[in-house]
Amino acid sequence: MTDQDEGITTLAKQGSITFVGNVVNGALGFAIVMLMTRFVSPSVYGLFVLATSVILFMQVFANLGLPLAIDYFVPQYLDDDERGKAKGVIVQVTATVLVTSSLVAITLALSAAFIADFFQEPAMRVGLLLLSITIPMLAIYNVLLTSYYSIKKLQYRVIMRDLVRPIVRFTVTAGLLLAGFGLLGLVAGYVVGLFVAITVGAAVFTYKAWDLLTTDLELVAPGPIVKYSVPLAMTSVVFVLMGHVDYFVLGFFLSSDDVGIYRVGYMLGSGLMIIFNSLSPVFKPLIAETRDDVELVEQRFRIMARWIAGITLPIAIFLSLGASSYLAVLYTPQYAEANTIVALLAAAFLFNVTFGGPDGSLLQGMGYSRVVFANTLVLFGVNFLVSAALVPFIGIEGAAVGSATALFLVGGLTLTEIYVLDGIHPFTRDFAKIVGSGVPATIAGAPVVYFLESDLLIVTALPVVVVGVYLVSLVATDAFTDDDARMAAEFSPTLRKWLPVGPGQ
Image (cartoon, rainbow, N blue to C red; front, top):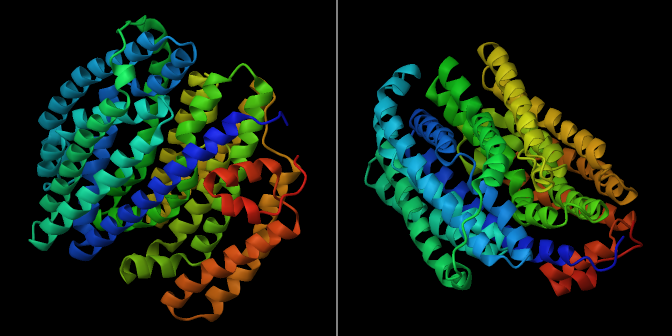
């Protein structure tokens, strides 16, 4: 290991900020869905999921992948003390996406009736008309997010994305649902929450990044930005479509009730993304700024992989074992039929996020945007083909099999590609200890589900047993390293003091 890599400190410090934000955002997100599932039927909720899926898919065409160029080029310009060019990237991207997103919003509004007829859901037309105004809003929202990433000040993102937006959305949605507005209440909560978040986020960014924004503007050549962004734009199209293709396939073959039930199961299974989403925004810029130092990149990759796996694995275990109970308690018993979906997706997301995530953040940081695009095509193609083949025969479980197959396949591709291209891999003895500790934790958790009959007791006891046995196993195998201690110290000095540190890899 190289001595005292400051990137570890940055990764931990900024990662801890985003982790807190993601926990709050995740809790509020679950609360919003719990609210929806109790005040509207699965059919109405499924209709809303379909409408927002269309919006998020169309929004990708609106921004052309350009926001992704911000957290790639801006860190490099700032590192070279070319602040005018850094500002130029942000200004040029913002101006472009405002124009393109407005055009896409108009196109969607004119196509709302056709899309509603395609899914045989007439009520979907009104939802799409109202939600079309969020397309330019989402473009600016993404520009703000990547601007925060680029200057590694993720606390600003936390304010906008993880606090203001979900709190406002929950409050507005709850009030309108209580007033009996149904689908219109869900749509209004979504729109108002996004608008307030952008307003607050723009104000905070302007205030906190005033020195950058007041720097003399220096426009940059659009060629490198377009060359980097276009493959990622196509990647984003396929990636977002992949994230929502399950809902489109289910909406076409089955009913909106099935879409609603599947969405709840998918949300619970994909909750494992919380750790990856906490570290990924700062991980990509850290890789981008040192991409020529392969040894340092590999060190950072190994540390990130170990932390993501170490925190995510026990969550995947108790969510998979107790899926039916969690669905019944968090939502309502009618959603418990999504238990197989939760188990399949938990395993798939665990594997995928450990090795770079579905968006290929490691490959993006290394500049391999075309490789990321190819991987995302595979991700979408496999998911779509498998889901379309299985859903007519086995229902919503077929969509879960499609997503899980694609996530496992692309995770394996990422590992192979980064090793072939740069000789980088995350596999060490310390990594094996992290994975191996999951075996006794799983064995200990299984009897809890088998012998306890109360869903509430299972939900309460299972995490305690699984996490407890997992931690004991980590200590017994001397799994903690010096880099873990440094990461832990950034999260909490107390945690660092009690962490049993063994020799590093």
